[in-house]
Length: 159
Image: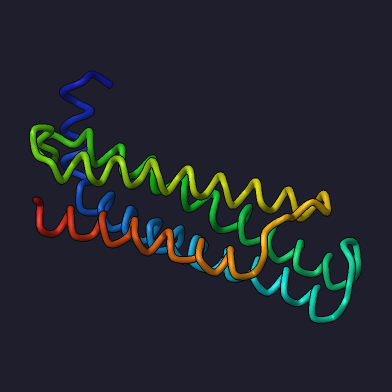
């Protein structure tokens, strides 16, 4: 498929791509909001129960965290990126001289880094090496909100 054909295909499928992009973003954001909260429950639940790493409760939390990350968040992040790049490549959609495009791009990259940080925290739990407290995870739970606000306002207001 040539460049002109690809542009025509993307233009024809623009509304479907946009709709699927929004669905994947919502799914990804749901995971980004919930996983840090799950880590809070994990840390504080173990502490409250006086339970150690490797216990039945620890294994239950690890199972939930793994499923959320692998079954929902990772596929949703990949779909968000693929569909977002398809939108960027659709002729006439993005004007690279506008600031909002760059605000969104930087925010999406930062959100991806945060996603990877959360995945690394899961591995720390798995190894019994989590060093963060529930309070710290509560604060990290606000990070996706900041990125969401930046992205939504940038895209809607086109500043």
